[in-house]
Length: 384
Image (tube, rainbow, N blue to C red; front, side):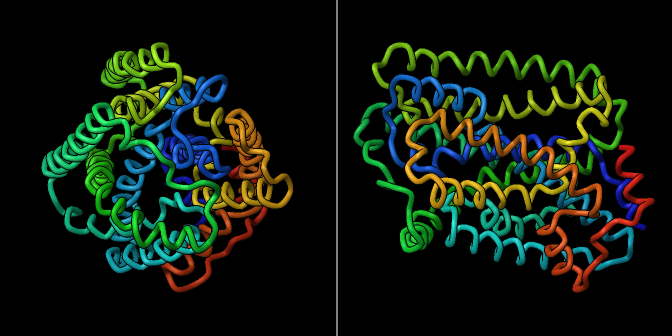
């Protein structure tokens, strides 16, 4: 039964999700260690160069992919639950409530930038759209993303004409428990309402992709439409990079807030470029070449939470104050990526799913599924 479930998974989705998990780590780690955009804006020297690379290739790119995949996963979960004769809506609502609890605990106890509670809260709105036609989903998704784009554009214009609006950091140091709780009750709830336009829009595009079966036919991964989309989004991204690079070379200090609109827009085009590139690589090299990345994707929730735990242990207990330079956080992220690539694949040789995924599933279905693999299932996974 478990081997059949494994075979029914769309490996490309796990690969893309694993890729996005590591992108999220790179985005988060500067703020996790106390030198990101929540602490300071004007950067120079090596910090400015690394921040520029973040803004070009990482910032806003990976939550876009992750949000898209959440909507896609919602469709796949509902579809498969219905095929098994389960009450799909009840199961997914229970799944969202558990995710909301995990996210709030994560936010308050460890990481003020948690995304799980946002996804869970906005995820309840997906039930309003599940039975809608694909065209309706696409229109709603584009409109909602468009509204948030206008908000971002207005915000960027205000910062350009009144730089004082961007001055001052949100935190002076990595926030403690009380500061995280205060942040959630004030700015956190406001941000949730504001970002819901974009996140729901991306969810709906993912739901649209599920209904259109974008990832269920491997022969399409290297199709002309994928190639064309890859090149169009690459060229568009390079054009959007120009104002960011211009700001970098013409200013004594680099401030991401002054070009946040172009960072945001390039996040959408680069996210599509990354997905198309991965699909073409999978078509050319085969899924086995990305088995470690797929393992990370299968354990996305566990790996996401482990990012916080590992960084907390390193920067709070073992080596306080080490994260003052951007390159140190980036090097730490690279080390975590290498560790999780190896650990995730090794774990899934002996277990069906990650430990947090196992608990999440148990809470969803009200019973514990087998966790440890039998020898034949282990051999099956090793051949992937």
